[in-house]
Image (cartoon, rainbow, N blue to C red; front, side, top):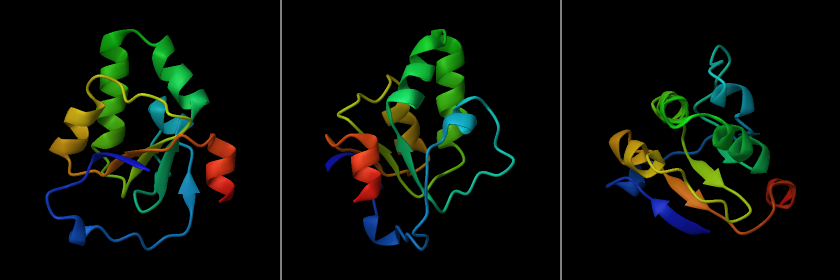
Length: 109
């Protein structure tokens, strides 16, 4: 995986859940059942949804998502992180990674 952001102290990252999450509903603003202990996978569907939003709305949705401090966010299929994603990941100390593998293949592995 390609590292886009790792907090200043990576030894403080504890992943204690084997569950992963596709945050489609969270990207739309629904956080009632958000589990920040799960690794979040952003695939083509989430990426296309965010691309469909105007820039201000997209930035707000990404900010709201990253501000929940998920244990890690992984972009699959070599998808690019949106403009402010890296800035927000640094602000909230969220590991941000990317893989070239397709989402379903990566999740299955």
